[in-house]
Image 1 (cartoon, rainbow, N blue to C red):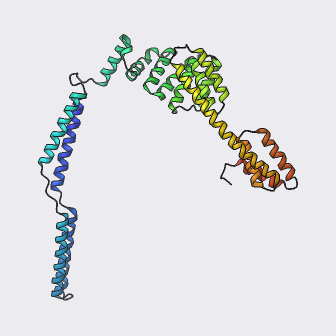
Image 2 (cartoon, rainbow, N blue to C red; image 1 turned 60 degrees about the vertical axis):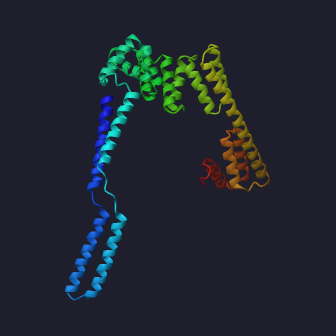
Amino acid sequence: MLLFSLTAALVCAALLGLAVAWLRRTPDSALDQARQRYEAFVADLDRRVAAGHTDAALAREEKTEAARALLRVEEAEAVAPVDPRIGFVGAVVIAVAALGLSVFVGKPDLPDQPYVARVKAWVETLNTAPETLEAKPAAVALQQLSGKYGDKPAYWLQLGQTQVVAGDYYEAAQAFKRVTQLAPEAAVGWSNLGEALTLLNKGQSNGEARAAFAEALTRDGDDLTALYYSARILTTDGRYEEARRLYGVVQSRLAADDGRQQTVAAEIAALDQSAQTAATVQAQIGGMVAGLEARLAKNPEDPDGWARLLRSYRVLKNVEGEKRVLANLDRLYADRPAIARDIVQRADRPVGAQ
């Protein structure tokens, strides 16, 4: 890294020097253009005077005005020349700063190692003192052993779990998929796969993750990882009582001093808050729906109102309310079935799509 840092510093210094040289050598393009226009204008005036198309006195006045304009451009665009010593000083500062940073932050006393040598050292450490390795080097070292242990589910399970700790969730998911292929009957591979996919999806369990957790519980109904994430999924789906029951199962299977107890307790507290909020919202929606239903009872000739009511019952998953609305539509529009069909179709569309 020291060699790399010094090389980068020298490159930066060289670029700075080139920039200074360029600024020093490059003429002002705007001033050049003004001079070119002035010279062309004067030459054209001379040609017109010689041809008798322009009076000589008028030409002199125009030349004077053009010269004044050129002087104004020169004054506005005047730039002090750049001292080349600035580039030299800047290069020295960059190099010294890079060297100082390497001395105080890096480890200049240690020789640089090519990546292959570092991987070899990590593999040796994995065999002798694995607890001293950080997660990413440990995962890299484990990957080097795939040729030797690639047919062992336990190897892929350990690799995937190490990659999860390292934050390499995609690679971990691939490792756990190998576990499910080599040992499909083992719940641990499926539950770890579901967890990796959930972490990869920023904490949300997609369809593949949900299927993995379901597969794990099919093989082992006591798999704690699958139970925990299944409870989270139920919470997301608004099935709070079922989620609370699963969290209770997880708590009962964990030792009292297990650190995961705090995690589950926090999830239950969040669940209670979500359930309370959902209940409040449902009550508010229920009140609005009841008001709409009462209004339609007094004034049934309101197709838009019936469409909103039917959609509301479907959103609330109130099957009885939906059946009641459909029965009222059949009765009210028995002689106008086209209107009833239109109401049902509008209720199927998203809000604002009419």
